Length: 245
Image (cartoon, rainbow, N blue to C red):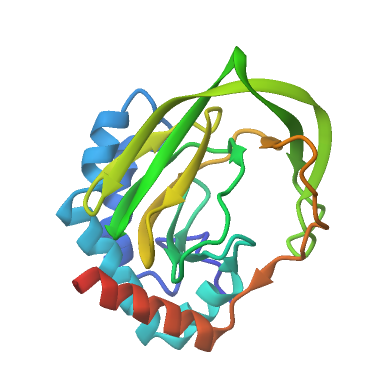
């Protein structure tokens, strides 16, 4: 079965996939931060979002694409789902969907990759943090990649760090922002449902940092929960309906 890594020679490649790839091609291999203004304008623009919406609609209608999507989409422990709709070695595009209000805020963390995100429905707050001697104290953990896609990520305590909030950007529908993988941050959805279109660029390191309040209970790392085809179809159908509101 295709994994959408070989396009445009992939048998599941469509005209909509081609439009998305053509739009991003000029930025591949470049520093995301150096072209952040251009990228946020592109990803938040109507031409690009319409192309991704066509990819989503085509995925819902094609059982083969839907099966690939379901196999590679997963629920986050904090209650949102990451639905992967397009991928190659240089970038991935997924829909992050919070169908219900979250019960707790995500931990401050960084990533293995740079990303650009735009809000399709609802709103969120994107917070960035910086190391500061007078900041709040956290336990610092390293989040390591597991040996296989079936295993949970591996969380190891390293030391402690003081950080403070540097910026807090409120992002509404149509707004977009770019973030370096090396920047400590977190996203707080405002209510629910919230949908974002998330463009993830190539990974450039294996481990990431997670900051956790000292003394907080660290639960067992849960195995990844991937979606089923019928579940992915329903989730993408909900995303498309919210997109039109």
